[in-house]
Image 1 (spheres, rainbow, N blue to C red):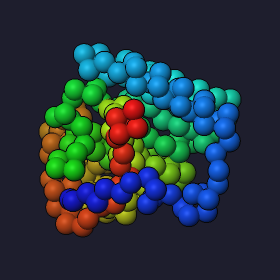
Image 2 (cartoon, rainbow, N blue to C red; image 1 turned 90 degrees about the horizontal axis):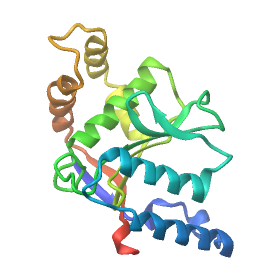
Image 3 (cartoon, rainbow, N blue to C red; image 1 turned 90 degrees about the vertical axis):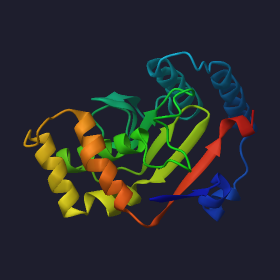
Length: 209
């Protein structure tokens, strides 16, 4: 699998780019982004980073409109409504800024972060029949990789053989039922077999700091 990195300006629709930001909203974004960047600590655990990201998203965009929280073993999800009873619309996997081994990169797209997104997507689509997922995101606060959910739908959910392997693993029909087996023995070789170039929106907060 090869990633094709697109900057946000290329990913956004032209009609959206024509909209001028409201000054108050822009200032709120700028202040909250500054606060987020000031809280980055490579020594902190992922739980700590996850909290900072959630606070930034809630305070900047979603307070009172969309529920953002953990769900099961997913780091963060954005629901499609105000409560956790509403379907998940966005799945976010967070990593520490210093955890380069598990984080997605242009050189290493088949990382644990991407494998986790695959697992969480299948969990929503297969186990909960959720058809409302829009995006799957991996971030270490600095770097953001935003995948359109249609990619996960096309390459993973619609591959019957791969979904059958997932179901067998979930039902305890493999030698072990831990997540490492899914990541290393099911997801990793399958992702390696994908020969297509996968588009992803990518940006680094440090470029705007």
